[in-house]
Length: 365
Image (cartoon, one colour):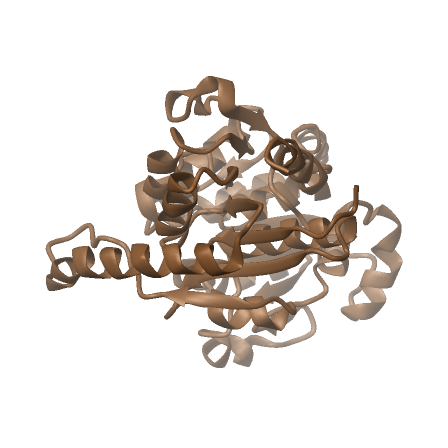
């Protein structure tokens, strides 16, 4: 059944919403080579650049979220929302989608709302253990909700929930044989342990500060560091490049990066956690407290409940040195964390999500 279908996807604002949508589109393209794809994003956010880079067309809505603090920007929200609903309605009328998929973010609200009014089958994919306001509002109207964590029936109708996991890069599914290649690629000493530091593509100021503060700790423990500072911070930290430390604004070959790692320090975004479960390395999470509903801490706690990672909150950064030294010098702890986080992996997430999309789509076709 490889007929031509029109598939509309909406999600953005952050990479955590954009990349799952792209992964889902790529899997659908494999199954439906004749399909037409269209993305809808927020006109001033990163999806307007990232989606075309992946070869897909995107249209922008003039939409933004409500500020949690008192702000004059909130006065324009009702007008932007009305404009976005009107434009989303026009996009749907012109494109005539057979199915609409939302992965969270500002633009997916108006898009899926108008799709539901037109009785077009729709699905949302929630990456986090604590859903955003857009997906909570849409949950009653969509046909299916694909989630990555247990316990989301307190937010969503239980009969619509399917636990699939989050889409991840396919090159991460088996990195065990890439260790030697990774050591050569990053010019590492194969006799030393390697710490990989991930703060996201833009970077994380507090994570960078704590790594800077502990460079002597790593050296004293004979640990080499691959430090992804993020592009906002590379100029501040590249001065620390030396034999046992290498800084990078961004690392594209994540498969080799994970293969090189013995221990990973990371933020706790939903996409990162899904990847780290598949990779199966010991992790110290430093969740960002500056995200909606503190969802990174909640994501990390879902892993901690399975004794599968360590978490240090930003306010407790004085504990980093002792926590790191305990982990690097305890091989059994490393093995247990690796084993437990690996058991949480859902490597078939993208395929399982597309299976659900097909189910709701064929009820209409």
